[in-house]
Image (cartoon, rainbow, N blue to C red; front, side):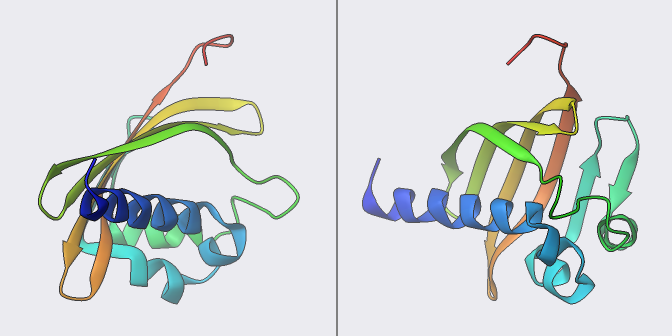
Length: 125
């Protein structure tokens, strides 16, 4: 991987981890800084989200400092210049899911463009 690609993947990982931080999630302004205006998500529940609906959920305090999301097996790849695909395993209070995110580089930096979660089996990881 080139240095430029490594920096791109690291920027996406840093952004993803910030979005999982309970303090960042509690602040609509901080979350909005990371979301692409065209953000969409297909949640592990099967529900479709856009930027405005996800801001409502994240600011509701669904992830507390006492029960953070545990992340493992995070990796990323540059799909094209300015596009990074991340995958990882997340466990939040026993709800386990494989996560897939697309980040894209904009004039204002790396932004969270698309996310999908797929529930994992009880013993799968």
